[in-house]
Amino acid sequence: RKEVEQDPGPFNVPEGATVAFNCTYSNSASQSFFWYRQDCRKEPKLLMSVYSSGNEDGRFTAQLNRASQYISLLIRDSKLSDSATYLCVPQGGSYIPTFGRGTSLIVHP
Amino acid sequence: NAGVTQTPKFQVLKTGQSMTLQCAQDMNHEYMSWYRQDPGMGLRLIHYSVGAGITDQGEVPNGYNVSRSTTEDFPLRLLSAAPSQTSVYFCASTQTGTQYFGPGTRLTVL
Image (cartoon, rainbow over all chains, first blue to last red; front, side, top):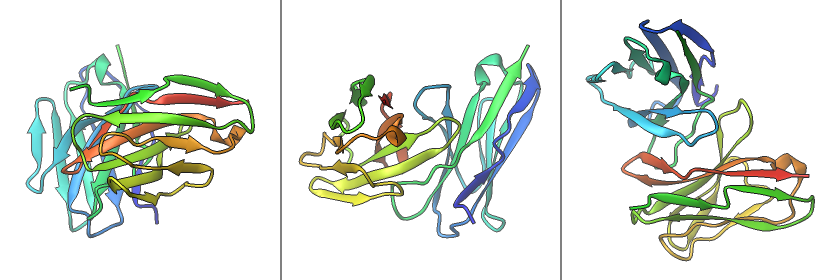
């Protein structure tokens, strides 16, 4: 089983839509969880950390389900500028995480 | 702070040539790593370092060497370039789990 599994998409949504991505991870010892955003041909950048209780940052909400070993990201009121690849990153004891392929989001007018 | 810097931004090599990709960070992070990303693929870990003088192999280390003589610098050496090494290379430094990436080096091997 892969360490991180995400639906590669692409998710093609209109502006203003709400879209959700899920990510499953295999390492039950993972302690920290993050979502990164990667624009085409650019480096990944941290979008948000994921806390046990779930957390919200503006239009973005992240949830963690340790029992089922999945992480979710919800984007409300999608903007054209949200078009990117979203990478889910669970991290165990090592500070060097494993990245999956990510989920591609395309927001169209 | 400049963050993580990488040079060069672009490079074209011929098969068999060697070169060094440079990476530097000014955030005093202990952990640094090198990834490669092929079209439509995820990031794959090549080598990483948990501090000056300490390096280890990642998922795809063959054909690459690294060294970490200072906290700031973590160069990646291609020993004898092959077309299969055509890729985008990202260097990252890590603090409390958060990865800070450099802008990448786009390498083409002919």
